[in-house]
Length: 129
Image (cartoon, rainbow, N blue to C red; front, side, top):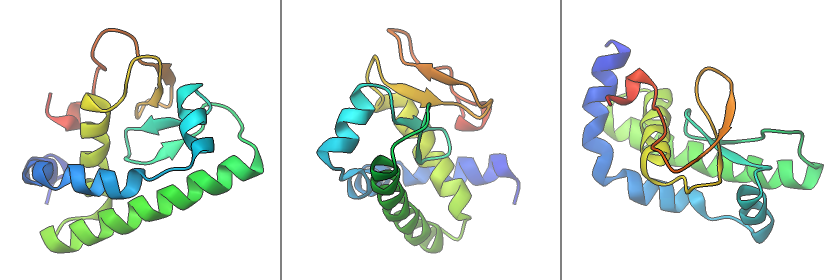
């Protein structure tokens, strides 16, 4: 199955994305603070990442969240018969589209970290924009 067909099929996940995102979004105050001040950001691949080098403690906390996200994505992928990568990318698209507030860091597939301004994020083509 081509990536674009997989992504289109995954659009049916839209009703499931909030529950997967909520499950995976549980975070500590340290991660919430790091998201707010740009030390951690959302990535188009559905995981959290670091615009700059994190402390070991912050890296461990973000790794734990990403492990929970991957588990949620794996469950959805098995239910839908698609790849974990496609589920993660679909959640990443939805997150970048509607859940990244102004002032927060985010990463697109081009590898450039940006800060969300007042305009919508220019999503990758595979997001179906």
